[in-house]
Image 1 (cartoon, rainbow, N blue to C red):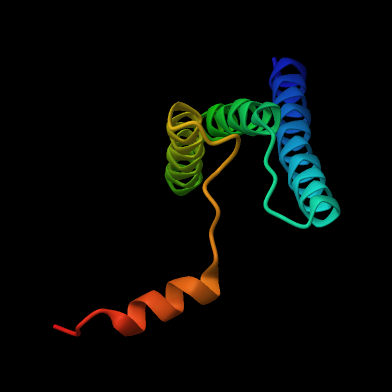
Image 2: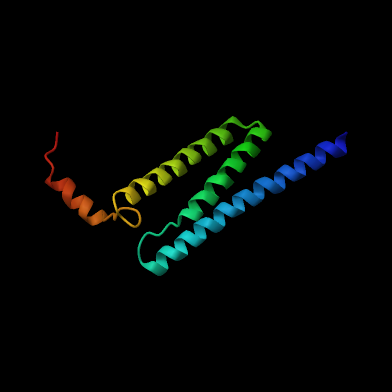
Length: 116
């Protein structure tokens, strides 16, 4: 019986580690692609892979019965789903990718707004 539990623990450890490694590889690819393109680049395939890996980590966290870990992964899933929503909203408006974000322009716009 102990051998069976040990092997289940080992399998889950390998699955969780592989999922976390997948997310790390996606992050590195995203950073590399964005640097190469000189703009924010996040392919839809990377978003889906990260969502899948985050879901696997959430299941791993549930297996470990760690509420804080599960809650953190659920927040990550919500963020990932919001990224997908933004991606599809921008596609429906005719944009080819995410909306352009210019932090220096955002600061300038905020200075023009009256303060409450």
